Image (cartoon, rainbow, N blue to C red; front, side, top):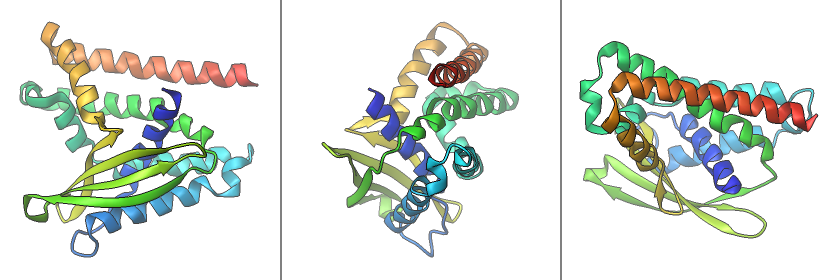
Length: 212
């Protein structure tokens, strides 16, 4: 589970780096370029240096916050109930969900230890407007299949889902959110996500203190 969380952390950051004009690059080329950018940061000697690691992690986090399409991701994870959210609730949910993803995944990248990526193929659908880019994360012991589901939106390619060993990131969150919404309303979901984001942040801080 810890390894899968780490792989999802890498995938989450790669999703943020996939910002390119659709006319200039294919979905796969966009994915490869984004992977190269993030891997370069992870392999930067400064990322291994305790004195400079925070600065490199901040660069990765900035890319996530600036380039990740949270509108698309929030809509798909909530599902049809998204239509019942008010504009204010949509904004509050996206903020809370951004915090949850950041607090859950970013610090896990500290465990990076030279893992590699090998692109293996792509499946094109919807007249080329949707593409599943397939790859493998290579550890010293095993290869893990990963896929990015991408779509062309406003002249650029964005990732709207990640699959690790066939398990959809969106479906995983959607199943959790569906259970909460079945018993509550949009505000209940927002408050639960906010609380979980705070819990993850406090957990990471505690782990850092214990590691010192």
